[in-house]
Length: 525
Image 1: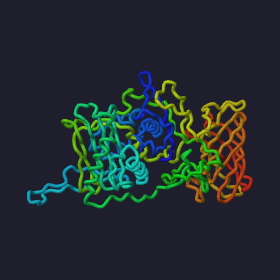
Image 2: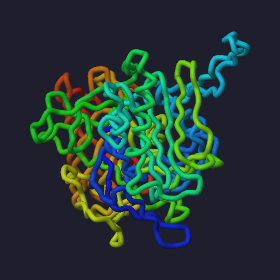
Image 3: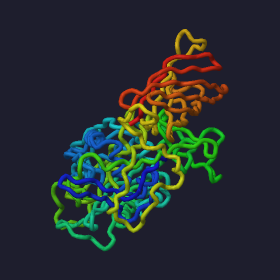
Image 4: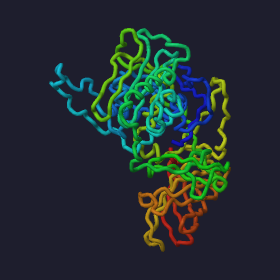
């Protein structure tokens, strides 16, 4: 959730020419926000960038597994809502977030009774199926708690529910439809407001302003006769670590933010934490997610925030609210059509996508950003590079591995693997490192940390590694220093360029431990 994402003007090429420029609801740009902030404040542009990094097909697959039956278009505009779902279907999808990964099928009729109260029929227990890892769901829920407490959903926070409920707002273009989905660990409720014939509801109509207060009244009444909800305990697989606000990276032990302020703590999937950094001691490469303008073109320039909820509109429009009780004793949602579009919907779906080896956690390198568009519009023109990210590795010169000086550019993120020779003096297997290399002419420097040891997390904690040396033609010679709890080791690495400049292979030698063996590196895409 500490991943920084660029909130700057973005232009996505259209199939028929021109470009689509997504905008935030308030028309401004923050320059840089974290994933948590983007979700809580419903920032559209960071959501589009995040979806590109996660992959449209992954988002569509997750939506389908969570009960969204409509075809999800694999387009850049999709993360902002370009698929028709009913209020009931969307509310049911949120049960997976509220129950730590288990989706609960709603039941419209619970029982049938005679006039004297004698039961004639009772509905079977609700069907449940797991669609998310509990740790992934918990991270999302924690961010959505902030969205309700201090984000766009704040008007929907019931008294005494701080930290005990979560939710997400939605607003269509021109304020024609608004919605809010909120939940506690026991109850999920969905609210939609709009007209049968789409037209603006009111000036400055938003999900937070109109739909969220309905959720507030609904939950206040539901919990009037029961104990206040208690939030989920932290499930296995969630780690809370101090982070550096400037980079979003985990702070090394004993280190603090550069400004001396107390370090905020953030939640991560255990084993998928970002690299560590120590401001003032090590120079962290930029962790900013900016995305590119490449990829599938947007369908049209008018889809930046258009979501339709449901196949038919309720006569007369007005208000549609419903709730689903996680325990299975109640379920329901008004029928009718909601046409809503949102300020930043689907960001939660993207964020909740189970991590892949190259996505959240075991991150690939941040994509190389495009040059800012001269036609990008917005009242706030942010700086080209947000403060705290001056150390971004140079863009990689992919495919340029020609001889003659330093034609190849090694700048960027690499995964380095050193496999000890069994005949060496030190009994060691394969050690994998994630390093950020920088190149200036023929000089090469870099830093990173140990990532895995024989395919597992290092038992004694991750060590830091620094490299310096040069490139001549196709040969790279580096000296390295590795510091960890057990002391400091140093040695040399010699690589030859391969794979069009995206692969390096050679040998390493550690002087102190008398260890040597094969060394290889692959550029992280």
